[in-house]
Length: 196
Image (cartoon, rainbow, N blue to C red; front, side):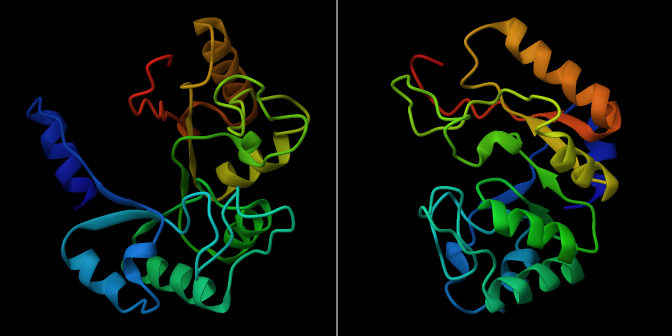
């Protein structure tokens, strides 16, 4: 539940886990539940998991996406107060930029890239079509990468949809070129796909 815990566990040669929500649907419409989950150990949360919910539009919500709802704005503010890390994963593009403007604390994009926003340039035609490809490209992705790094954030590069190891390395090289190694992590998203 703290940075001190992480340092202690690492020093002991152990593996630790951080409790995270992928979408805040568990809160229902009452953000006071965030305090309860924080007391139980929650330290990271994304507002959505691709779909639209009461807090924001996810990246797969609709052709015409909105951003954060008023309740979503309140949720980001409370997350900052509780020091729950905001995860930008699966948020719609408008909400992505609204969160970056609103948050007062470092954040993460735990397992994606700025190509998570579906458009004709990022959609794959494989059996996993509808998922954005993880490919980073410049100059297209520079603004989003810079915005994450400027706020002390970390990009967890996803590789579940890459076909070749060289593609993963190319994304790492691109991210290092733009934001440097201090703002890069690995966010595989290996969630049981047999062809991953």
